Length: 304
Ligand SMILES: Cc1cc2nc3c(=O)[nH]c(=O)nc-3n(C[C@H](O)[C@H](O)[C@H](O)COP(=O)(O)O)c2cc1C
Ligand SMILES: Nc1ncnc2c1ncn2[C@@H]1O[C@H](COP(=O)(O)OP(=O)(O)O)[C@@H](O)[C@H]1O
Image 1 (tube, rainbow, N blue to C red):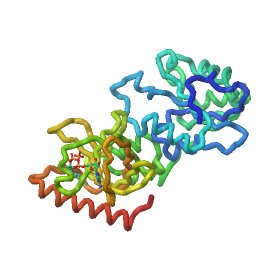
Image 2 (image 1 turned 45 degrees about the vertical axis):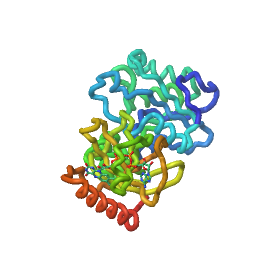
Image 3 (image 1 turned 90 degrees about the vertical axis):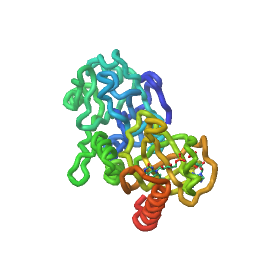
Image 4 (image 1 turned 180 degrees about the vertical axis):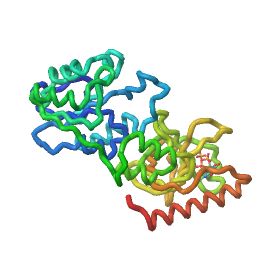
């Protein structure tokens, strides 16, 4: 997959299919827009480097299901040929719907345009599917407006998935995403209490843009150097030491020094909320119960 930052960065004659959207999380609905069957067209995704809300009202900007790096990795796996990451600034935001489409048509050979049913673009979000239907006829490109994706009559959208993650309903969030929600980070040193109580935990701090699952304990799948392990993780904040949320994972059947290594933690099932403990002994006993919960889940209920 080639990553470019402007519409004039690819061969003007090459026939392209372009999927437009911010695609946070690349959930099942997004995938229907992005997947392309026409082998004669290069499969392209057009996205922005920032969420439009970052410019409109940064305080209201949602946390993300994916960092840009994660998005790039996933689109590459899906077989996307070109990823256009367009810098979203106030100039860009003020292009009219017509100017935006002209910018695309004048620079690339767009044979097919794909958008979700509620895609809006151009100044004040005026450009919509109706406008695109008209332009596609005038300009002679194929337009595909993809209907909203539903599971059990519920809308699959990034906002719904974020809310499920905040509520701790990770299994439903994963069902909507079509894969487990994950957080990636470099393993950092903690208080070294883990090894002292016989339960080492690899600690990572999530990227600040990421949506953090509800505080509590989760069964997880951990990837280290392309090897897969399972484990049990606590998502928490330790007010005594820092305010940043942290993911601490005891990795099953693993023994090794992984400080400084990047690990991916995928959240599979929620066990319980985070608790305060009176003693280290009580903490240890409760974590041991969580480990048992995790091992039972992996042995009997794993569906990934
Ligand atoms: C499965 C699991 C569940 C945990 N649950 C809690 C909890 O409910 N409350 C809490 O304060 N800490 C909890 N912890 C965090 C431990 O306090 C922490 O892992 C331990 O202090 C080791 O920290 P260290 O890696 O900094 O040495 C949990 C850790 C694990 C692995
Ligand atoms: N099974 C395991 N699960 C998690 N970490 C492990 C495991 N085995 C060894 N380790 C190593 O031990 C470290 C965690 O030990 P711990 O005493 O909890 O220290 P810290 O407080 O620095 O996290 C991990 O970062 C990793 O390098």
